[in-house]
Image (cartoon, rainbow over all chains, first blue to last red; front, side, top):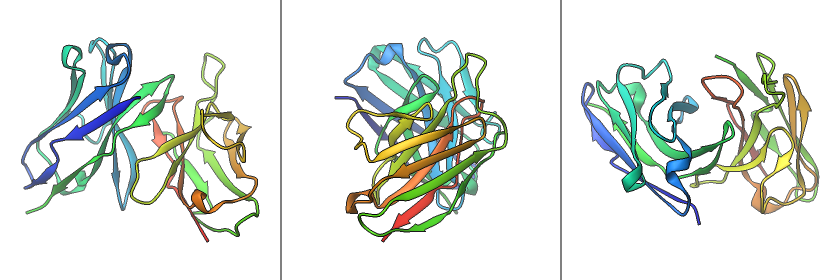
Length: 117
Length: 111
C-alpha cells in the first residue's frame, strides 16, 4: 500500500524558515517523480515543485522560486521541502504527492504551515 | 500559466439524480505526445484529494462506474450518473500537459 506521511509543519513568523519532510513507503520511491502541492483556503490548490527520480532535475513554481527548494534522499525514501523567507501568503496545507505520467495518483494527509506574526 | 475554470462552483444535488461539472482550460491540453493530461480529483471533508479520472476519461481503480469523464482540447466534463451520499465533497480538475500543473477552483457538491 502506497503511503506518504508529511511532517515538519507549524507556526512560523514572516521571514522564517521551515523544512517539510515526507516519508514514502509501499512503492519504488527512487523510480518516481515526486511533488509538493499546497492548498490555501483563499487560493485553492497550487503545485509548488517537483523533482525527478534521481534528483537531477527540479522545477519550482514562480511564486516560490528562490525561496523554496525541493530535494530527496532515495536511500531514506524521503522527500523534502526547504522553505525560506516565508510569507503570510505561504500559509497552507502542504501535501506530498507521487507523480506518475503528468498527474498525481497518491497524496499524503498534508501538514499545515502557518506564517503569522 | 494555464487557467482552469470550473463551473458551477457550487452544485446542489439530489441523491439518485445525475450531476455534471464543467472544466475549461485557457489553452489546449493536447500534449505533443498526443495525450491529453486532464485529471479529476475528489476531496471529501477533512481528507486529502483522491484521483478519480486521468487522461480525460480513464477511471482509477476502485472508482465507481457512475463517475465518467469526457471532453477534448479545452473543454471537459465530469459526470456522476446517480449521486450517492458518499459523493459529497469538492471536485477539482487539474491539467498536467503544461508546466506548472494547474488546478481548477473546485466545485462543491452538496445535498
